[in-house]
Length: 119
Image (cartoon, rainbow, N blue to C red; front, side, top):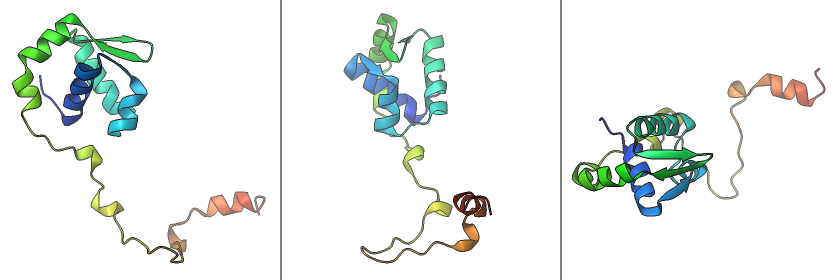
């Protein structure tokens, strides 16, 4: 089974807490719904986790699997790519109390038309 860094964080959290709310993963690790869905599907098909409403828990097989695979799971350092801001999104930060002037070419003109009553 191929592991992504979010898979490892998912398994670590479940191993520590035994049962976790789905939203907790998004809140703590900033995982997207697509990442969670892929991870849940992968581990559910293997019988490692159980999903009850919005709660996820490890099965007995899952606990044994984690213990047997602990070297592969916990000792390899992985890049947390989902936490990195893409270069095209980075920009120079403004100082405190500095005036912010947006680039008018990048603004959505439809927004302002709707604010002004559709004119």
